[in-house]
Length: 225
Image (cartoon, rainbow, N blue to C red):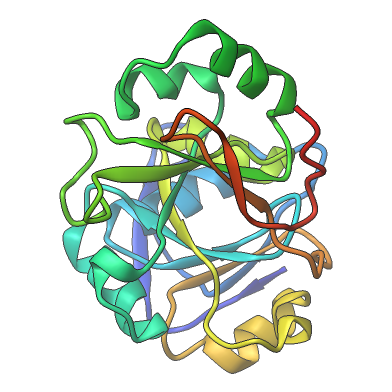
């Protein structure tokens, strides 16, 4: 399903032709995301667009981590300062840890390897590769690898993590149905990736910057490590 708006993005199709499309709501198969559709999402992100996309918990707001204007737009939607926005990176696998987080010890790596992909966000010391606009005042970053094939396929197609944030407000029900997201937020975001009905419980957030790891938000993930 494709709902068109006046937004246009360019991409190369499977035959190598350069195409320009207008779209807003795009449905992607959760088990078998098609390269053509993923290329459309990539084009939106590379153009500085804001997407709503599915995860293994609730739908999130996402953008390219290397587009400061897009990051600022997400913060404007949430009505928060970027340094106070609790923004996270959505990664495709643990290989991104070496780029965007400072060196971690073997015991923590074993925990991450066991817990991810899964409904956790881990707060870790940010490396120099993390854009300053995204880092907290403590120079930390939230890293997440969702157990959702669409989200991970988008990141693999893009070639680097996307920035992620929750929708503003407490009415989670409004962020489970992609068509409702489209109706409510279509004038503020550029694309809604329809991966089916989403969950209603956010990820569990674990602060791993101290000697003792601390759950600072209990969510869907059960922390028993």
